[in-house]
Image (tube, rainbow over all chains, first blue to last red; front, side):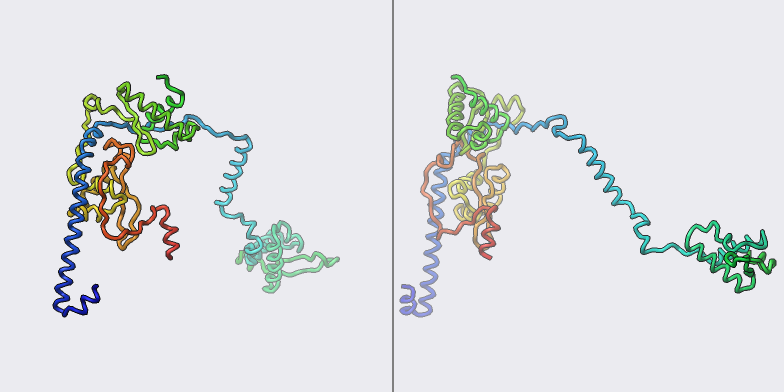
Length: 186
Length: 193
């Protein structure tokens, strides 16, 4: 019908027909709305008196839930030990790791050779001469032993001390050569 | 009329709950069938009405609620120094009635039938808990749909929506596809994706 109408009518007539169609639709919608609203008003007429009665009905709030007093769970004595272990483990995690863990990565600072040379000189100033192996007595670490050995070599090189072989040749004497120089150094 | 143990239990539960309690919940608590619960609760409600007790039990859709008797309203308001809830205005009544008959209904539908803006009326009804949100309509804009609550049934003395006075509902245009409620939205969104 629409296609036929458009074919038969001119442009102006088509526009007029379209606007009339729109008006028709609007009036139809408006009539539907009025009919629906009329029905709603009928329902309101029945519901409104019932609302007057409904407004007189009071309700109460739910009763608050009362929590049971006291502890409701059950435990074994071993649970306390487990809890203590967990606490100790957690505390251990918080603390920094012990230095033993880094022993392979971070080495100890080597014993300074210069300090050991001073100690050797002080020892020789007291006695003048000392057995080589006695100089190593009291050394607490491998680094200190190495430092003692290097210190004796350095002192020999600087002509501060000299080594004198004993009969066996296993434990030579270390003799102080320049006492004044040794006193200046120490 | 001698009360059975189940009736006494229903009485205690409804009193403590204050709000509406569904039949399924009563059935779970009392370990009885829903049919038995309904029979016991209806008998109790009739008992209260027959004896004109100060409290009544109302059946609201698939649940029950204990309320004070309407006849004693004046004494209640005097004792508690409170007032009855205010009347609904004409515009709120119209909006509520439209939603009750055309639910789930959008605000646009309410405005289409009334012919005026209904934003304030709809929000007022939401605040009074006479209507609640019921998902969104699957159209551009995804407007919120509204439906009535059990408080609406209590306020208007209705046991269910079937007890609404019959009217001739007008169809406005082509039916619009309704979207499922919010809980199912992600599944439908994934399907459309």
